[in-house]
Length: 142
Image (cartoon, rainbow, N blue to C red; front, side, top):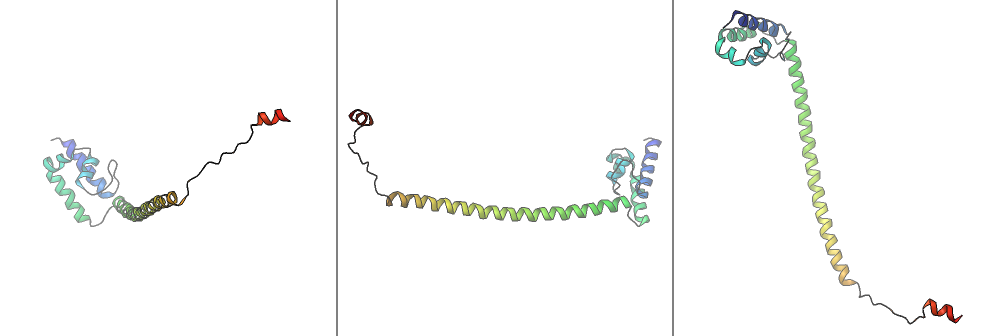
């Protein structure tokens, strides 16, 4: 446990609470605090529990959310709306795809039925042979 590590964590707490993160996304979480302080999360949750508790106490005492976190929350809402729109579009496309699959299946069945009916309805084709003279014989007789 070094003094520098504790100073880095305290400086990171101050930056996060001021809404001026340097290394993290600015969220008021232990994970963001660890990133901001350049320490591993378990260092905060196991070695410097007093600083973690101080961080949460200062968040509660501050009573407002930093600008960076508000921006992230707004972005989250926008992305959730976009995701829901995409989900609805996907649902509509799947329904359309199922409709087209049924139509193709019906048309294929009707096509097979028509082929069967047509093959029975057509009379046999009979070749007509005539005894015409070949073109070579016609040229010689002229």
